[in-house]
Structure formats: C-alpha cells, structure tokens
Image 1: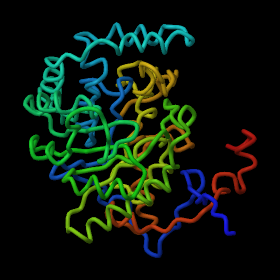
Image 2: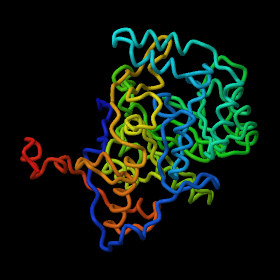
Image 3: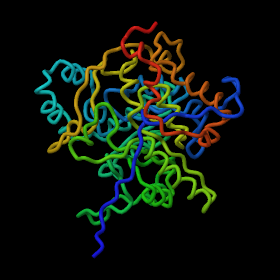
Length: 380
C-alpha cells in the first residue's frame, strides 16, 4: 500500500537570498524607478502602510511630495475620532500589559463617515495624493464617500483576502462591481498565492498586495501559524501577474507589503518581481510619523483575537533621510531609494520591470560570510 505524505516546499525570506550582479552595469542616475497604478504614477515605488502609527494627514502629504504614496487607514482612529492626538498619547503612555485592552476599547468606537470625507479633503487641500484603506466589510459603505471627496486610490485590505469568500451576508464584496462603481485604481490584499492573484486580477482590480504576517508589529504568524516568507511569496504572485499579462495584455502591478527593514530588502523585493513596496516600521521611525516613535499593527485591537503588538521604535531620522539620505548608518536602514538605484545599476536594470529579471541565489550565508569582525562589533 502506497502512502501519501504532505510535501513541504522550501520558502525563502530576505535573509535567505542574494542578488547576482549583472553582465552590464549602469550609473544609478540612469535608472527609472517610477511605477504606476492605472495611470496614477509614483516617482518612487514606495508606499506607506495603512497603519495609524505611520500615516496621518500630514504624513500622507509629505509622502506624496516625496514622490511616493501613503495609505490612510479609514477603519482606524482617523475615521473614528475628530482629534486623534490624545489617542496617540494614551496608546504611547499605557503600560505594555494594558495596551491591547486599551486599543480594543479605542477601536470599538464606530467609524464616522463624515470623517472619512474630511481626511481625504484635508490631504488634497495640502497638495497630496489621497490613498485610503478599508477592510472588506466596510468598503461598500465607506469607499464611495472617500472617492466622492476626491480619493485617488482605494485599498481593500485584510490579513488574508480572497475573491471566493463565504459569509452569511446576502452579497459580500464583489470586486468587479467595486471597480465599475468607483472609477479609481483599486488595490487589494493581502495574499501570497498564485491562484488568488489571478482571480483578483480577473475582477479588474489595479494592484495586489503581497504578504501575510511579515510586519514587525504583526503576530499573525505566531497566533495563527499562517504566512509565507516574502521572497517566495513575491515570486509566486509575480508569476501569476506575468501569466495574467500574457493571457490578457493587461499588466497589474504587485506590491510587496511588510517585513522590509533595509535597502537590501527593498532591492530583493524588486528582484523577486515587485512593482512597488509597502513599508511600515521604518516609516514609523521618522520625525513625520504621527505616533512619535510608537508603532502597532492594525490587527492589534482585534476584538477577540489580537494579532499584533505595540512597539517602541523611537524617532531616528526624517522621511527625506530615510528615503533619499544622506545616510549616517552602514546597516542599510537609510537612503532606501539610493540603495534601489545603485542595485539596479549593478544588475543592469534600467526600469523596475527590468529589475524583475535580476538573478538571485539561495545564500543563507550572505550576511555573515567574512563578517566575523562586524558581527563581533569590532568592525569600523
């Protein structure tokens, strides 16, 4: 009798792989790192996560002026409280053992539709692009209000989102209907699998977020045991995007979302197939971030099963320094845009889409090989 066993396929994260230099090199100023979502062009392919600790109105404006895009979480405190500043202060000052219960209370307040429109108007008035995020359950009600107020991009986001979702409602969120109704780019996530990406793209959406549980403030991998390391997840989802493009002629970008700490992580995301990256904790450390060095995930206040934690990340640099330098660090945590440009030059990629062709190797020793003095803290 032949027995069948469940097969485990290896999966790789940022620290497991290395990018192989190309046969042709370019000066960094010659590369084009722009990307776009159905006509909404970003000069730099960086997005700020839809987290209350990262994005408020002022941060969204600053990120837009830097050439990227910040997504405001409209299911968060900005959609519930007229003045969020006291909420930020209370979360930062509450003892660690009591903070999750506090946030469950804070996020139990109902979302106020008038605030959704107001936040969008404030961003637009300040000269920024307005990108707003909703969980699937609130999208049908609140997304039209945001678009009416002038939102440029709508993000439908949850820990795991699929097209085929069973629920007790008469009709769940139908992405194709949402695309037809709103007439703005719709980005959807998160997912890590080929089939889900292709099914989402067939609904007419304009971007897919890739990543389940890799963020610094998220504990879904510990609490639920779900997730796929980001390099493997991005490669699989990029394959779905490329196959969909071959079949339809419509190119739908993917965004690697979460787990990115350094310029090397950024570069490996694009070499894996990303068209853009979404980052949270590095941006939470900027002087422009609204939580003043405190950071938490959006699943932290879940009413019955919190999947996140509040972190004290500190305030270390300006948004400009994080993105464009100059860097005072040698660990790759600053000048992320510069790192991407230089890496693209080394692999000979003139555009983001050419960067997808960069060769990578499995190299778990890439960060430790020959680095004994650095690891001992003795390097210069």
